[in-house]
Amino acid sequence: FIFSNIVVLGIFVKYKELRTATNAIIINLAFTDIGVGGIGYPMSAASDLHGSWKFGYTGCQVLQ
Image (tube, rainbow, N blue to C red; front, side, top):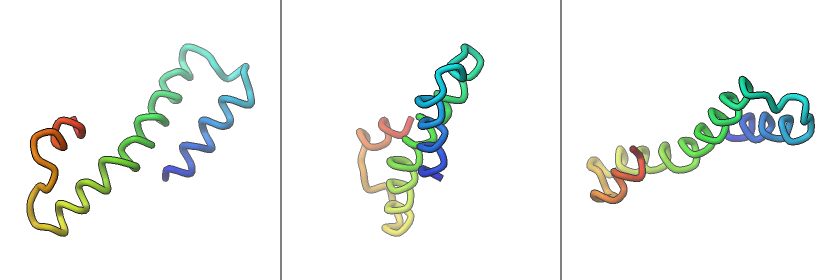
């Protein structure tokens, strides 16, 4: 799903008329979704495979 969010952001870059205040919410969601897919899921998956949280307090704060 990271790819689809990059496509969404690319469309907003290409078509300036889509950059409205209402669509700013969609842009924000695309950025945050990329962050969750790139950071949150891998950290959670690694911890699940390990059986406990591997990233300490700082890693926990990153995911909040």
